[in-house]
Amino acid sequence: MSENRFSAVLRKLASDDNRSDTARLRDIFEDVEVALSAGVTHAALVAALNAEGFALSVRSFQSALYRLRATNATQQATAPAAPARPQATVQARARPLDTPTTDPTDLDPGAAPLTKKQQRELAADQWITPQPNRIINRFLDKESKS
Image (cartoon, rainbow, N blue to C red; front, side, top):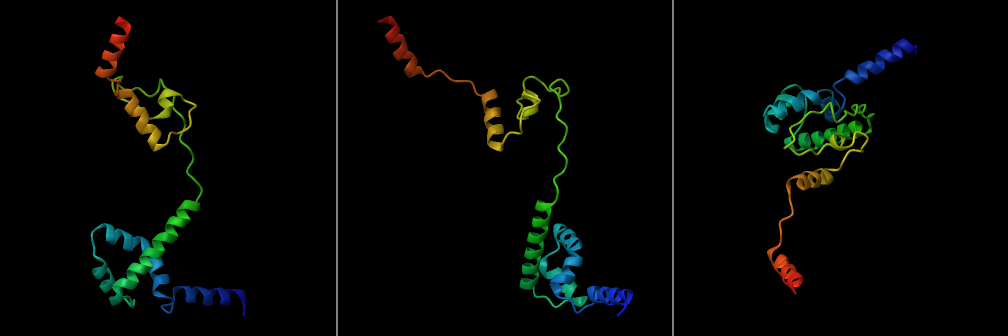
């Protein structure tokens, strides 16, 4: 079999309706996601797909959708990361003085990114002032007078 003929046979197999429903669903996965995000129900999608030659139940559609989403998430997680944004200097980031900052580049341009918890604590530290404890202050006053 010549290479061109072999390639043609493989292309025909790839576009053939003999492929599994999940494999054919993978081809139109983005369109399915768009329809779902627009509010189309699973039952309506299954009915439309079955009218076009699929043989899916709602449950098998949901299962295939789950597997395809998991595969896409795995592929996106292993994809190369986007290039890091350039670090801005403190002068370039003008902000009102009375607003808290949770961006480490506002404090130190060479700082590593903060975790969500560290960001919350930093914001809280900027707004929370220690309140005097009246009981302890009375005790300290008595001690100082004695």
